[in-house]
Image 1 (cartoon, rainbow, N blue to C red):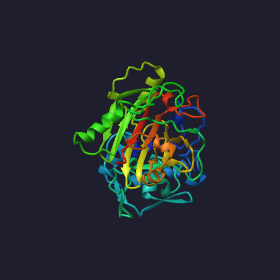
Image 2: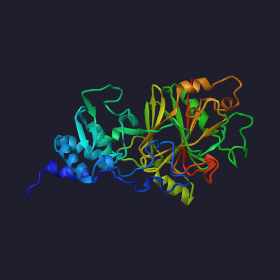
Image 3: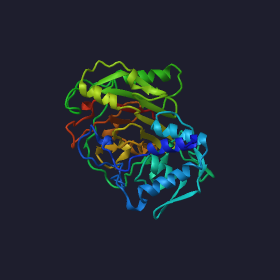
Image 4: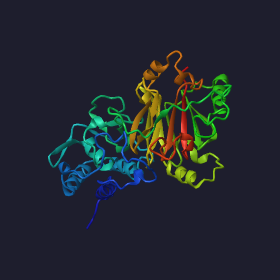
Length: 378
């Protein structure tokens, strides 16, 4: 029987749909509680009776996809098969076309997001559009981008997340600080301050280079690998192996660490994260297949003397740094924030492995692979 190209694309897309039940990959390699702040109300991916049967969903998806132009199907297939690793353009489709599965009605974008990214997705309020998307910042356009990999899930922080870590802040000292020598008070071993990196970033401004809004340091346990990466562009990809990757490639850094755990975690970084400066703050999008863990002063209660470590699952975004909150935290004689580096506040991000009271690693300096993002508040 003669089969058209369109039919072939539709079949390939259906085979590439997101699994209805979790396969456990996102939590593989982690330990501690499997819950997290990012799962919120949709804590488990489960089969839903409301979503209708698999046959209904397949029939509806095929019906919708067959109405899309071939070039648009190719764009969608590129995004889905590469899992967002390849740069794909926007998939602009009518936003007001509704589809019904069982007793539930979904807009066309929501249907595609559910089929190809998040089967447990319930409402568009759970989503955040990525800054790379043409529809970013636009309100109710007639044509909206339906590319599933131009979207992310929002972390929900309304209720306190599980205490993956709750302990006094581990401070970073400026390189010329008289007490920046070895210490066991913060890491359980040698202090992991960045004595060389801060001077690297300050030299950029003195040399007349464009002002950076942050610098990024990559660490393997207590050792910093490579120089600081200065960021001028609004968005930065930090990755180990990313098709068409452009940004901070950790795979190109020379590391002398022979630890099997470090090498295993390094290989799992994959597509890594996307760091984006937006009007309301700095967002981190987890592009990898494994969780990341984030600690930031602006994610917690401003009156708290301890900081939580937040678990961010694959496909989720979190506002890791809030400029307004950061300004309000800069109080005179505040011990926590007077101990921060001269270049501003920091956010710490660990790949795959968490740290804190619920983990064998009590300090981030014990994590195999982690980042330090130092913000320039000048």
